[in-house]
Amino acid sequence: MPTIRIPTPLRPYAGNNSAVSVTGNTVNAALDSLTQQYPALRQHLFDGDALRSFVNVFLNQEDVRFLNGSQTTLADNDTLIIIPSIAGGGTL
Image (cartoon, rainbow, N blue to C red; front, side, top):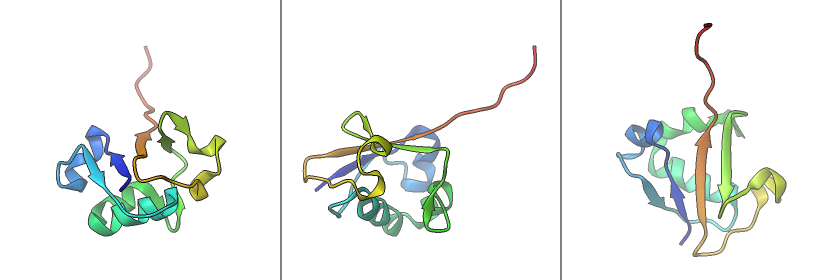
């Protein structure tokens, strides 16, 4: 069963878990499984049916955008890592 690692800012929406076991044989199916388990996460990860542009997903250290995107195939022992882009700050 694949695992998704949850970044600290999103953990309150995932039962304070740092990792969640999910079902699915593609990145998209795994993320769907995650948001079915924790519906409050959906608004932070998706804009409609599309993954938000500032949400990066890595499969075993590889950015899925450089693989087969959301249709990248997963094995049972794979780990997905969600990394939200961080921007902001002030002027000096």
